[in-house]
Length: 532
Image 1: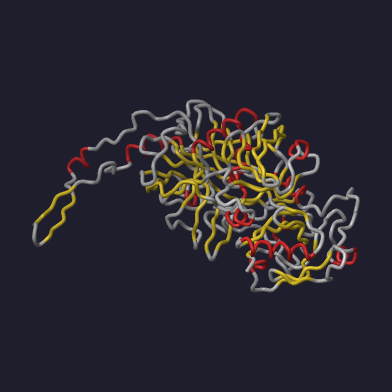
Image 2 (image 1 turned 180 degrees about the vertical axis):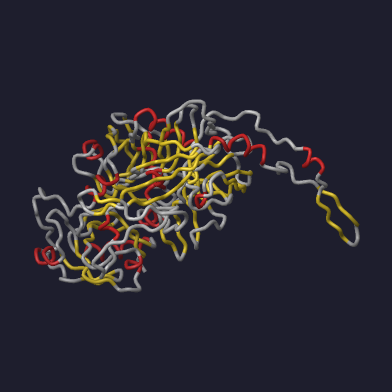
């Protein structure tokens, strides 16, 4: 889960975490030593010594909390068989096995601890073992442990180390790649466990404590505050998780470990960091307790998470798009593509429909729509409020079961429908062969253009033959070979229709027009382009 960004990266930080049963009575109690500690002193020339105490709510120590909750936190060591062919270096006729422990499989090499070398030959080529580590925590007394999916994904062997030094073998109960959560289990009873806090959420600025296994050191506590809510990491998991940002230092090996409030309740599962170096710079991200609690409950009960699905690719309906359609102030998500035969297709949802709400819950982004759909079970009804052709209407969709990410990628990565009738879009009579508009050179989509750009037979519109580099169209990602299929959600068949729409937008004083597009892989969408 690594996303490069302007010299920084958002990286998974190898660890585990979840929690159960709240530890009541973990209050702030001063020890005798603390009671004897004098308050800080500030000396000024005019007023003399000035005595002050810590601000209200600031603890003198986190020791009592750590003492209560740390037995529930574990270190997780994972051994994974890797395909030796993936370790081949270009230009060399042989392979390298891993030479050191990788504390964060998704965040780069670790180099901490001892590796196991090349492993053994299992008859299908060299299969070396790769070592990695993370964190986790007990949520039940009978051995259920929460951690991150990326900590245990592909694990061949999992060893859990408790605070008292015991080492126990663990098995995977269930994993959820969409939220990066997993549940594992060890044999035994009477384990100290902790609870998720899903109601009394801490405020931004409240103290928190992170406990885990950074760099394989085990049993480490760090403290900080809640920095922000609702962070988007721009990865697949952010479709389902509104991340909690904290500044309690978390590092590689902390992944899957818990973040506690001052009452010893789990308010988050540490999952990622934002850093220019791979180490903590005070920006860490945790999966909120309410999300983690619901996911782990399903994993324990069923071994997997079942989410709703309507079969539609969506994108944000932006203010620019709203301005282009004279719908200023409207927020929602726009349907970019409908999966043939899927629930949305069967219910009559069309490409370019603008979704405003689902089951009465307002939608302000594509992520919000995905989350609302994912919350329902298979077979349940989803009532979509949409705008189509400038008018509001409702459509009822019977939810299906969301496929795996790999299955979805296979569906959305196609190049069109092989069963399409192949009818060509005919340019208007007398239309010019090429039109220059919005910084693009547009040509009719005839048989020659379809062959030249390898376009599917069912795609209709006009072809982008060239794009000026300094144009807004180029900035929005329109490139040579893309087909413009609609303008302001109305299908087009000739370049002159784009020109006419641009002139109409100028006369109406609208700053943008909305262009529907399809690429040669069959993917579709809409994008606002400035008319200047």
